[in-house]
Image (cartoon, rainbow, N blue to C red; front, side, top):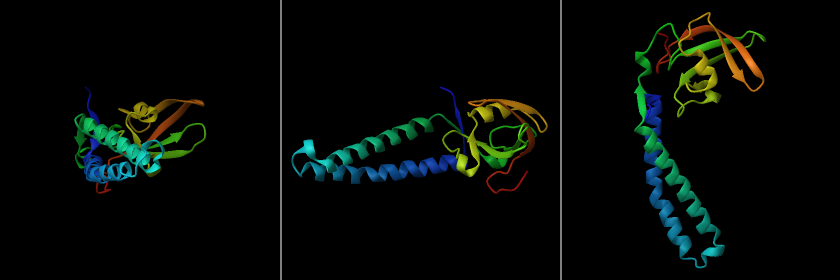
Length: 163
């Protein structure tokens, strides 16, 4: 079983989610019980909805618990360097269009593209890992190969200050 990188903050967020989901269990069980008491289960939408919610809840709990055993928790405040690695904030430039993008490389369970972070397991991140400023990378994308240059590498940690 391989380890999965995750930041301390990402791990704490998943712990909070797991705790919240476990606290939600009794309410879902109660909803199933109440819906069952309404009678005929074959046409009981409340029962079906509660059972579906229970299934989703239990699946998410099981998923998080299984992942937690695989995590390699990394403190973003302790990493730095001149090569792209987990926790780095990397600015890249599309060599064809000149468009610049900036991503922070995080674990797959905490990456959020809308907030500027991508999974270290994504094709773009995998192409960047181990590279330095000025290096060119090639990413296989649905529209073909995209050539980028690594413009900058920063390590901001949790306090947002470059090290």
